[in-house]
Length: 114
Length: 111
Image (cartoon, rainbow over all chains, first blue to last red):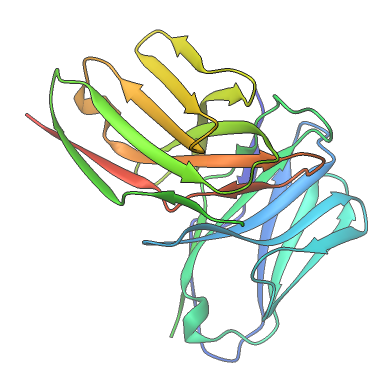
């Protein structure tokens, strides 16, 4: 069974802190994604990676960066956390080029920035 | 166009059918998906439909696609309390690995 694991379910950080959100998948998927989920806005793509060390900006990359040093791990970095980054963050992975292969999601990290 | 739109809320009586609607704007969409999110969890794929199909049925779930109107719907027959969740539609455009999600519809079951 595909497993996408996000390291923390809940995080509370202070404004200005550097924050790392970690995600690991065990299915050798090429694609990995970071989304944020906000009420009434649905899921918005922050960054996407289609291979090790490769990344693409999503719809809302401002204030975020990512790292993909190993195939199974995709990290989201908030360089200087701000209160408007309080949100639910969802990591997902998928097989490249497989149209009927779904995105597999982790359970999410709820980040609060105070 | 890049928007995928859904109503935010739907309430249905237990045992009735639920119909969740979605509109999308990109005519190059190839696959359209329905995901379910239960409280405290990530999203799970419920079903998907290829853009050259009109309908797909899977047990209690029926997906209808009107490509001309760019309208997608998910019908859940005999709605149960376990169907309470947020339902997201998503589209995948030709040549693109990324999915674009709608705002999600929160389905509430009335006993």
